Image 1 (cartoon, one colour):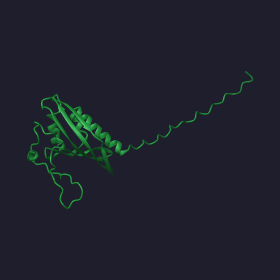
Image 2 (cartoon, rainbow, N blue to C red):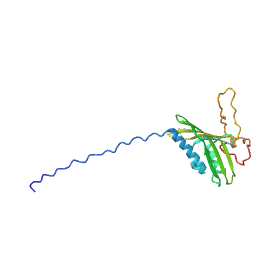
Image 3 (cartoon, one colour):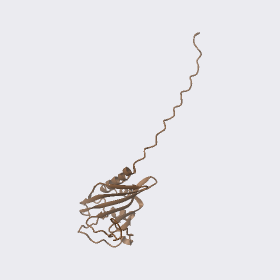
Image 4 (cartoon, one colour):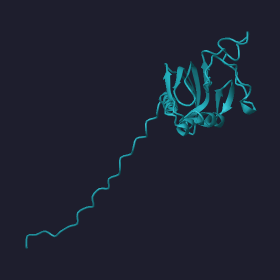
Length: 193
């Protein structure tokens, strides 16, 4: 046709750059350490041995039967308790959290109830103290101590020390150290007491 204009190439479409993604919001450390405690409690109640001990650093220490023991020693002991038909329930009170850099301390009242199963019924109630450490951005438990309210303190406060004095950590001895004094009759001493 005589009136038609010559065809010209259209300009290429503009290149659309993906929008720059905003950096992920930083998670509040207090929320993160509380999540670790929630996971610790849930996996204990579920008796999920692997996931429960994944809440601890491999070099964690746990106060059990009157002495500080390694994570591996406590895991071996719990393997004889978890999955033996018992129902485990934890009841936690309000959690007090203190965070300083890559360390956090959490204190809260904790009741432990185990009913049924091969190890029989057991109840423990006391104060739970967890120390968490952040390594490579991940928070896990480094120290775990439950002070059963039915037991006397193991290390009295020295007269010249101000304020409350927690029991001094003891080195775990071969075989777990001397057995603790027997409190009232359950056949099994809770590993957190």
